[in-house]
Length: 112
Image (tube, rainbow, N blue to C red):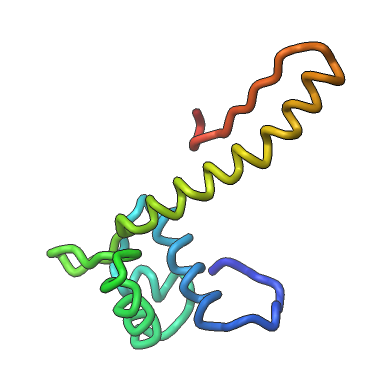
């Protein structure tokens, strides 16, 4: 389970992000029992959280009853990536002015 400091936030939201991160780390698909072992939460709790995410498309249930990341996460990732690029652009512009050299940004994707 991902260890998060006590945030004073909403526990169910923190649990949902833990589940999404664990599914991601496992390659994008896991069974309920695998999730329960990974995040150390009761099966009914995990099932209830996942059933909340399925209709919105953030998680999908596969024919083999495993749960997988859903297509709505792509939209979130793309938007976050665009914002990251916009935030970095101003710093890159500063570097170009300061050093008189070109500047580029790259983001690791796994080992690439």
